[in-house]
Length: 490
Ligand code: BES
Ligand code: MN
Ligand code: ZN
Image 1: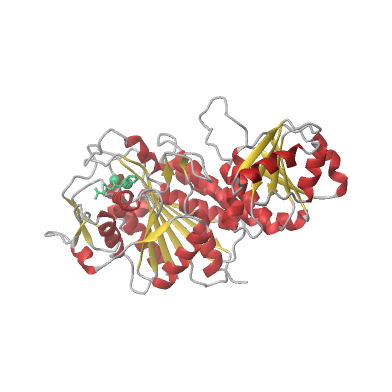
Image 2 (image 1 turned 60 degrees about the vertical axis):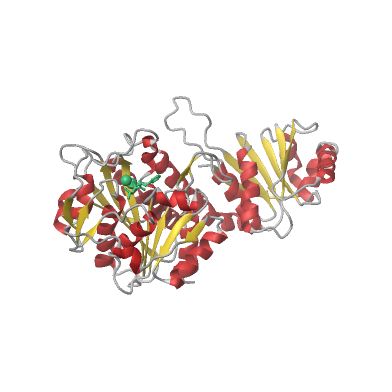
């Protein structure tokens, strides 16, 4: 990830501005007004900056607009990148402005962030988030992770404001790396190993292997993985930054490292996209990483079910009946509706072991949610208005699309099976809702719960403001914010 150094802005820095050989980033308001740093740059380049800006203001300069002056006279800089941000700009706008600069990054950036340290922090976070690339499998990497130097009014204050925002960016990068990783590399074992490495950050990480899962009775989870050569695993990550004995928030993630559909095989076209079917688990991992890096004062436990859904001689068949850890039996009519079979056991285990104050599961669960909400919003399902509204507020503040969907008895009835306690599919109508209803059968009375169906938002075919195409890291920021809004004290 991009590294950051902050230096305090002072009159003696004129050489630094003159001699900087990379790109120089600047912020102006919508009137094209330069701040003190901008005025200084303008003097160095003999008014070229102001002339270019005046022309843009004439044409109408809006928040987020940018302009670039290549090889400005009087400076060693490769370019000056200017982005427009209004005075009372929101955190979201500041982050987006930073992302505009991040996208233009050279090898050595200098950002002139005069103004409030908090606003500068979001600009920096935006620059870092947008400057992500997944280059691990290019033999000659497109670019090395960069370094940003920020010149601010008060460097120590900027560092304090920015540190938690960079922790969240770092967590987001972990999620993106996991989601982008192909399935021959990110096996269940490799996934568990990467999570275990996070114990170095102060997380308590346990990997439960198949024999233990068998003993616990996680038969529906094991059923999904039984056709694969990769062993099924559940990984438990505990962050205990809160008061001793405070019930934790539990985050539960679907980690299907590849979803072929199993014997109910998916069509070939686009099947490669199912490398992202561990997006829920990837998000849980990224949030846990962010919480540990910023030493959140809260108790949060992350649990992921890691399996691979393959067709083989040992795979489950349509029509098989399997008993869940809870004890309820499930008639598996479609082996491609596997995510819920994984989640129900991990959710049950999370509640039995941790008696959480709340539980949030994340899963690339249904294609139907993409039909309903496209790629703009994740589907939000909940049994608790307080927790749900707090989440929607956090997601809104982070500009991560989230839209609440209904639950109800009539949908639950669609899961009735003639031979078992339930079926694992409810038919074509309301496919995302019946999937959520299935999960709700494994939520204990009194446990506030949210299910997030992230099939449409975890990975995209085109770039967004904050991410190149591919994994987005959706939800890491919203969940981190929810933890600080609702679960952190002091
Ligand atoms: N992993 C898929 C859902 C999915 C689809 C994620 C597209 C990302 C993009 C899930 O396991 C699945 O196959 N769901 C089925 C459920 C059906 C068989 C009831 C679906 O959506 O078709
Ligand atoms: Mn599936
Ligand atoms: Zn799946």
